[in-house]
Amino acid sequence: ELADGGTALYYIADKFQADLRLPFITTAFRDGLRGVFDDAVPFVFVPTPSITSWDGDAFEVNWTGPFDFKWAGNDKAIQGWIGSIRMEQTYGGIGRRIP
Image (cartoon, rainbow, N blue to C red):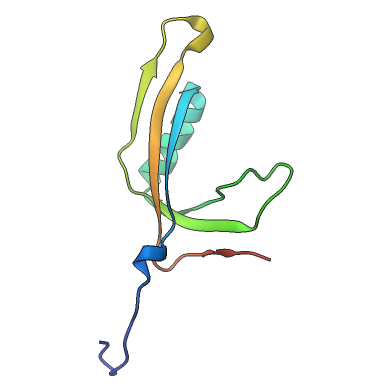
């Protein structure tokens, strides 16, 4: 209940969340992700590729997991960083189908 007698509702069950696993990314890409993580501000995530088509979904999210990327691979053909990103929709952010 709010101070003016009204009620605030939050639909937490409908929040967007995603876990991305990124295998064998370059050092430059990993460093770019580190910048996003260190900024600690919401960003917009589009869960579908936007090169040829887009279903209109976009979500303002926070990176909620740790920055956990490790070097993997001794073979030059498969060297790179492996890690994951956990993100969850912000409470006040966008999260709708955009026409």
